Length: 470
Image 1: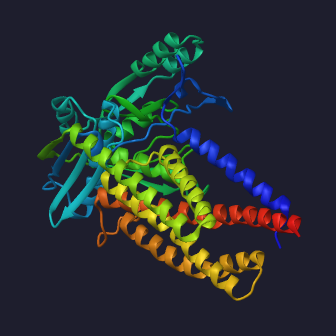
Image 2: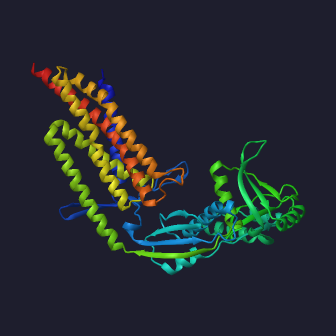
Image 3: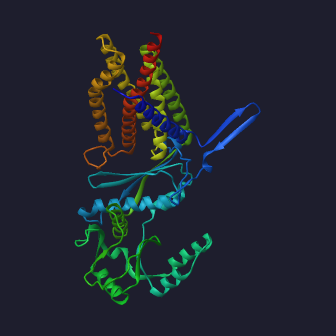
């Protein structure tokens, strides 16, 4: 038997969650018209500071290539000079180089994926909202340069002794820090391989480096003559790691240790390998997608979504009456939560993801239909309204669970999180799967938790009215 305090607590939780999600889901700027007065509110001014870090409450709804417009590139990686066993690592390194260059260019939400067919290795890049095509092509098409630079201890101590207070002084200090490194004869081509591994003694993540014979000799001279100094690894004139030389290394096998996590050590190994395994990239195809196509498509999709949601709401009210209104409230909350989740987690909105969203709206009401149908059966069997409600939710759960678990499994297969070669690797299909997965999980929450608590409130009010009448 449920208690009133529990129902009130759950209702307050649902209300608070809906209000917060609604605030996040709303556009950046709001306007209210009161007669001759217009009140405007801009969410971008709200930037609370939590634990010393500033956060913005103005989260954008990110749009994909087919909606925002932009450019799609197909790059072919030349693996003729790369050993077969190193080609996957080389391709991953090339992807990392392309990604870092795009991030430096400032393109938001790029989609970068690989396609392998026999000896054909390709990188497919989607750049939403891109205007300057020529600059992006030159940026992606060049090869990354990696080199090792030595910092003298005296220069490092001098820079550290300066107390920079203003932002301009801090910027100047950082540029002085970069200029304190001097190039050595050791380059990225002399690094045979970098690998993320674990220290056998501390079991902490570290980076293992292996140099070529030529690099081994140069590295041995550097480490013998510069103990205690910093040896920075620079990619495209930018430091990716600056370890300290703690001992002379003459065998060409070095270890970089530090405060690494498993993920950060793997990412750094990929960055280092991008300099060790440069792969020439050739642009096979470029395709410009106009923004007008995206605007037209998204307006049609929004219209279809509103029509579909309205028809579902009308259907539920006509068939189930008051209980249908409860289901419709759950659907509205579902829509608010979905948009908020898209913004919080940066889900890129594409046409396939909109299709998955519309599909999940229809699926979100399935659980309510199963529960309400079971409720009618229990009432016809002579159960009280409260008993029928609890039994309908409990007995319908098995069917709801099985149906949604199967859909979740299909969504995971479409997403292919482990990059299995025998499964899909298309970004558009993965986006469809991610949107479908989010929709199913949120639909379960609104169908079971939200609708159930609203039903409890409705039944309690109905019982109190019947009691007062008698």
